[in-house]
Image (cartoon, rainbow, N blue to C red; front, top):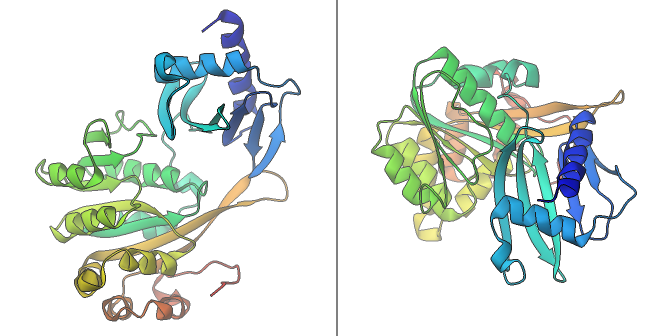
Length: 327
């Protein structure tokens, strides 16, 4: 990368970090845009030059030879002293490069500073079962997952295996025996990664994101074998996450999936980041706990009853979003 280009990106990352931005958006012939407290804003009136963006692409993907030929998208996680740890997601639109950059904290966060519920923190010490962390894109699911793994590592000496695409937070400095495996690099698929993890004598298996029916099958299988599994998933709320997971299975497998999920489920925590009037964002969450009543609802496939069960379960630690549900 040319010195002038490197200086430009050093300044861009510095300013984004100074503003406490969560993301940087780069596109040729357009100003640099960052997302601060959930809203986009320009930080440079100068449009991004095509050669500069191409230099960044070549530097971060080792892809100079196929710059004009690749299709789809590419994701890389970098750790550069001047930039910090970041995930770069490259795409093309009308043959023009675009890059969405997610900025990660320098250190693995403490769950107590994030506002994660005490009940959820207690469940991380479980020997077996399944916890789901759900929310929309940009709701902080990966940050919550990393914080809970930090708590687990610091309170008990455990073997933790993570399966991520890509690896976002560096957990190597935490106590215990921790292996972070990248899907697509260290293992071919999430399903293969779970099978490999089960043979590695783990105490905790953490799944970066369950997307497909195969992914859901894999995490249920891991939890069914008596391990503690924690995973993230895209869903609007806790009840929707259960419904989405069960809908991922073919009709012939749905009854078995309901039974397994009812047996292994510990909790579902849904979250979103809400802007504060004074600036910054705070975590709002809801918590579904696997009580006997909830397990019966899941086993019968009556997911429409879960929200009511959460409303009635306040005495045991369940909570719901303050917002109005759209059913």
